[in-house]
Amino acid sequence: MPLDRDELIGELKTMYAQVLEYPPEVVTDDIDLEAELGVDSLQHQLVLARAAERWRLTLPPETDAPSPLTPASVADHLLRSTS
Image (cartoon, rainbow, N blue to C red; front, side):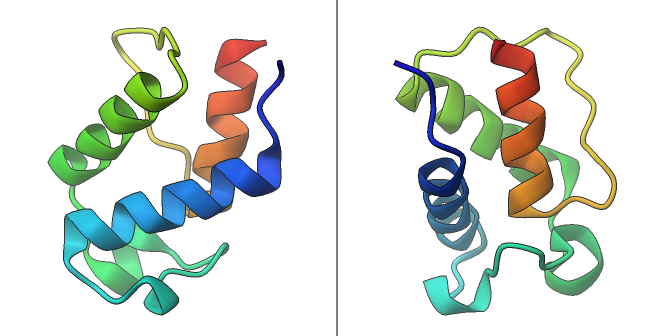
């Protein structure tokens, strides 16, 4: 069953909020995770690993972060990687 983009964005927002220890409502679909919330590459990779495990995805070993790094852009990147 294909991943639903809106569901994926919602779960990614929750994952980023957990990793950053922020309230979930702080992380919006289009917030710049690096510039506005200070996400670093290790935190981003942790969320990607959780997403890969959650949806049983096989991601390329060198998965570059989309720019700007937002929950929506990460969701689109994951959807392209799995198609």
